[in-house]
Length: 68
Image 1 (cartoon, rainbow, N blue to C red):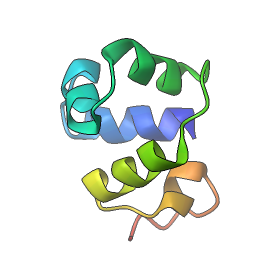
Image 2: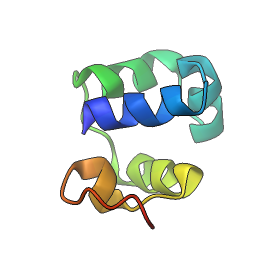
Image 3: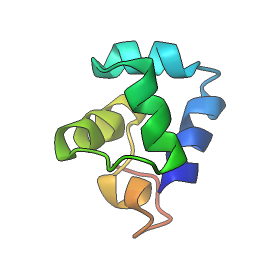
């Protein structure tokens, strides 16, 4: 899951700071999500899925299908 959110961010050429602003969290909190040092809260998971237009199952690694 953590590598997927990093890959999604990098595919869009976004910095952690830019994505954190879009998610309404701090850059440090977002960094901790990518590093697996902090669990991603459900509401942030949903915001990520909507932002990238992918399913939460894709982000969680349950599915390889990116479609929302």
